Image (cartoon, rainbow, N blue to C red; front, side, top):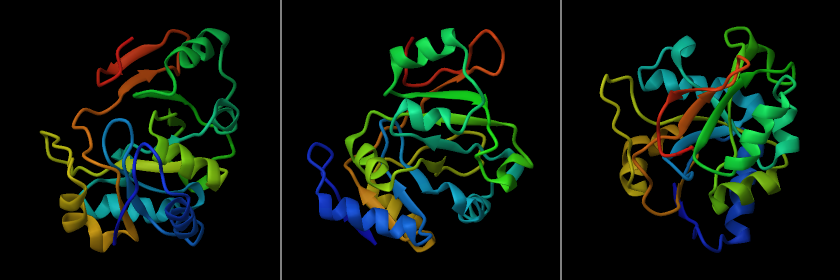
Length: 202
């Protein structure tokens, strides 16, 4: 199922339909300010792992991130953030950046068994922000490419529906997506390091 939601003025009824699917354990594909991603509620990590496995990704090698609506929500899922790193995040978020931080105990135990860190995003995309606002909690996401050496991101939502529609409850058509992923900043040490240069420029 594909549902069109305007990126500039998201329809509230459509947003509530998405939130209802998520609350009932649904896995969706949605636009962000960078690339399209598969998403679910944090407590539904098994669904996202199953999706990643179908793409040929190994669970211990799959990068999961959480999309947050605000900084107070973000801080619940990470260990305490130092002032310099927090100031950096405030400068560039919302935006096309993923910050790698040490995960807190609020993340599902099954997640923390294999991963001690988590990627944090506050995307500059009104559709996602409205979903997050109504949901009241972050979304767990992963990109929808396979494990090929050369990563090609799908940008057309109707192409995405054709390829992945049978694997998810809904594909949100938020317009053409990007083909450049977020810039990843590793903040697990005292000094932030760019581990992947993407769309975001500091």
